Image (cartoon, rainbow, N blue to C red; front, side, top):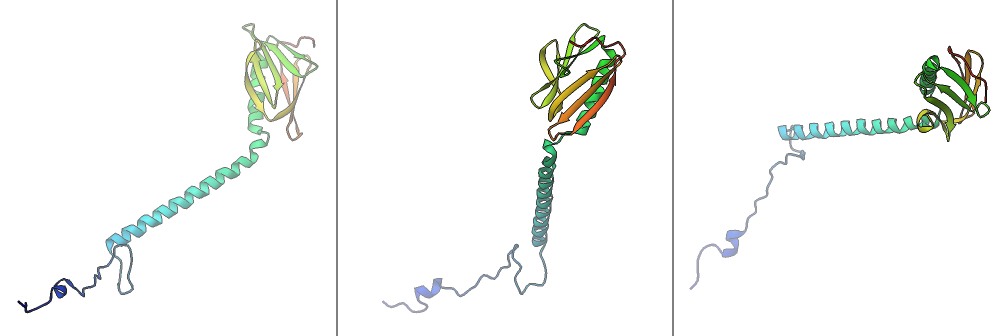
Length: 175
């Protein structure tokens, strides 16, 4: 028996082309954006804008490390202020080790030592532990007179920083 009509192959065959517009691609024959396309472009713009800001902030932080090995003037002023307060309350002040170490006695009887250690100046109480006071220091020199203490610090670049601190209780003889 022969079947009449359309062949089986022709039933499943189609010439239809899918021309549906994509939400992410603007075709040449379109006249404008869809809402989804506008939101996608806005999201892409925001992502790129914040990415650029993030990259520039990282670059700025990397540049701030250029001064890492330099002596800090703010740290120097803070150290001088702290030493001035300590020496105002000290009972006795003296220099030790040919002017390389400043030593004073607090009202509580504690012996406080200010000395150079590696590349910093540190503060020790009763020769135990230490607190860093100033970093990037090559050398510390201390001179004491009757009511003044001269603090001379040489930083790693060779520049000399000086401070005169007043002592009100008195200076003991050098040892």
